[in-house]
Length: 332
Image (tube, rainbow, N blue to C red; front, side):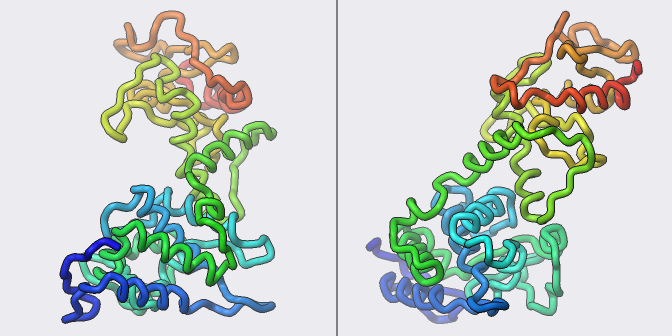
């Protein structure tokens, strides 16, 4: 066990984190006795244990590096993936906002706005991800628990505790939980492209599933087009930022459609032109340039043909491209 530094915990004034073993034992006890709502028909809600597992997974993977934790897309994806792996379908519907909100009652989690922890009265009763993220700036663990969670061995012990206590899992956590939820869900979304394309408004029955799809859409599109613009083939990135963006063919504001076949990887210039209707794509995947586009010379490569994904199932949908030509192209 790593030798801890002497650190005062603001959650318990005067307490020195000088004994890592006793601190870990305390949090194993607290993680083993989470307050959970009783379910109709028996049992208790699994939301808090799954959220804690997802938070541990994000810390372990490097997705969370600071004790200012947002209700981010990757965290929601991990929560939903863990739910699918651990909770039978007969259990209550998943929903990350409830444990993210009600974990404050456990004494080691805070929701913060303007630098100050919020009370339950301050928070009210948000019922959607949008409402909760508008009400808070971020969530955070108390200092002693955050200090503990920086230790790999402590994270493993706490994860084993949660899996054993609430889900009866005794195997290695690596076996019980998806190793890379983002990659797994991206591949699942690609596979869904084999179904019939729906150009109408797409409505997901659960907010978390909708949030996951919208979070994954940019990663899926950039992956399908090898992170290069489908019009000019440009590829440029700096760290996690890229000049290539995921463009919706059917506008998201009108259709809420995150099917991969409703997407194109476009550089910032061609994304702007496509949204403005200055360029469009023909039925033969040629790039058409509007006569109204000023200074068009060199803007689109001569005789340009859209670069297509390697997987034909993920080609841009003909219905979506036809809609763009008929409703957005300036020369229609």
